[in-house]
Length: 180
Image (cartoon, rainbow, N blue to C red; front, side, top):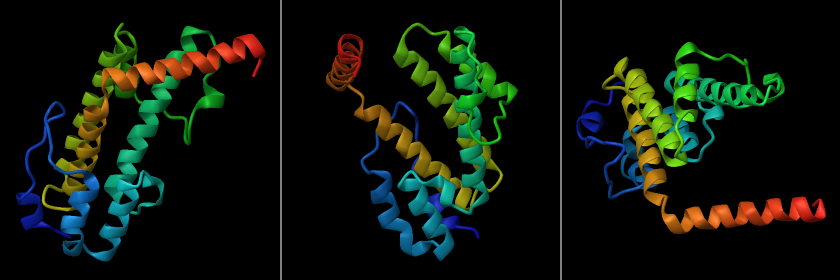
């Protein structure tokens, strides 16, 4: 189904950009324009449950994510000479592009730069997947997933980063000291 008016009204997004609404707020503003299956699939995407969605775009996006995560697992386990197979998801497939992106990202020293490289790749994948159905639901899914990426980056700050490191350090210290 084509959503000409809705797609034409979408604001251009950039990963480094800012937005004044969340994916949930966007969904609330347009859900009455979507047919019932597209609406359900969008709810799955917004609620981080893409495995339940039926739309081909979501299925392709999810598969792309699994391939990227498998490539990251393979690259990380290879560093320690560990068999990656027990940690791979679904079909355990790793594409050449994903392997290259994972290797380049993991080669960066700064963890923030690693994450940025991975999210830039995700952004490109979203653009590619949406281009096949420009005025269809694919563009709307792409828009929402990009919003989620932007919101994630906007939520990162030094204070949260310090909290994560402190909690990790505390947990690892207990494991080392007390075997917990």
